[in-house]
Image (tube, rainbow, N blue to C red; front, side):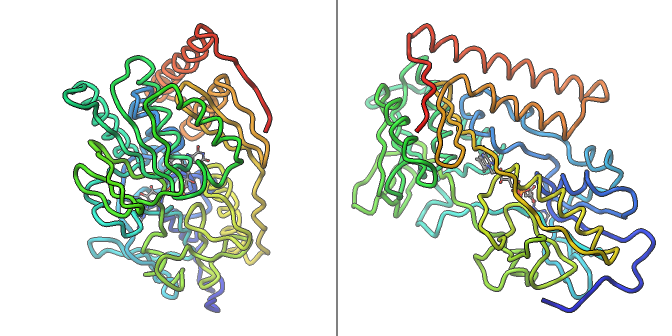
Length: 416
Ligand SMILES: Cc1cc2nc3c(=O)[nH]c(=O)nc-3n(C[C@H](O)[C@H](O)[C@H](O)COP(=O)(O)OP(=O)(O)OC[C@H]3O[C@@H](n4cnc5c(N)ncnc54)[C@H](O)[C@@H]3O)c2cc1C
């Protein structure tokens, strides 16, 4: 780590640069008081609520439901938002360099850049498979699915291939099946390289998802790797060629090149190593949080951890600039909620799993509550937006539960 300590000539209002303004970065901005001169950078104008973007595939949510304007949120926190990409952080000189050539000096910097879409070098995947990473990506996938449904079966039913059977792939599949329950119009194949679906979560989920899929035209392939993607085909490592009218690439996330370019990671493809207090191991005036950070004890890359890290980093930057000891980040154990369209929702707490369509209300509740916390409905425009989100959310939550009861499916709440 560089020996750089708190600068002797730190101005009365120390300058803090925050790079990235989604979960982690926005929470930093909202936690730093007016004792700091804070500048927040992000090239995109909207905060995006990623945990529910799968719902854009079915139209259960619209892009506007999942976005908040960053400039307004940062301004309301009393800080400055600059819509720009940071290309390098020069920690030794205390300078953030921006695309376009400008730069900004800082006394401390907080890096919250998340990860970037990664197709692991699979031939053709960048060009011919749609990314499942942000609101625009998933809204685009939703439009493609609607187009395929309108096209309907000519000689054969349109085929959708989902690459990745982790959380995103399964949530995406669930949304496609939400539409298939109304009218069968697509064949779907999901390809997962691991030994089972959602390999990082308890095995009971695999069986439950397979049971739901048995009623649909869905093929679930595990221990299968995609080796190439063309406009109409997906090749597997077994040599099998899958027909594909729409290929969706989920799950691949790699460290941002900014980490390596700024000397926060020792090599390309590595997340930024931080101490338990979220301080970079290489530069004391830089803190790295959210998905971009590699903590001493590995932590799942989740939005609620990113939010909590943002709060902790804001406190630690203030402590570091004031020459006080830093606080350890202690991740709160929180369950994971995995939605499977309107067929089911799983609550995973360690090795325990609860499954019930009624749990969709919990996932919706977290979304509604956190969006309202990030953008409190204080003005008529924000109140209107919050009311629209609530109305649309309430209709999505109540309909599937009723539909399941009508079909007589068990409202099973089982532990595994
Ligand atoms: C499809 C999907 C589903 C998910 N579901 C869940 C879930 O159900 N529950 C859950 O807890 N988590 C979920 N996650 C994970 C969660 O979204 C992430 O853990 C969270 O977004 C991490 O927050 P972050 O602030 O670290 O990074 P991000 O949210 O990725 O934000 C990074 C920000 O940095 C900006 N940025 C990047 N590079 C630069 C640069 N060079 N200069 C300036 N700005 C930059 C980006 O524009 C972006 O706004 C999901 C993620 C995805 C993709």
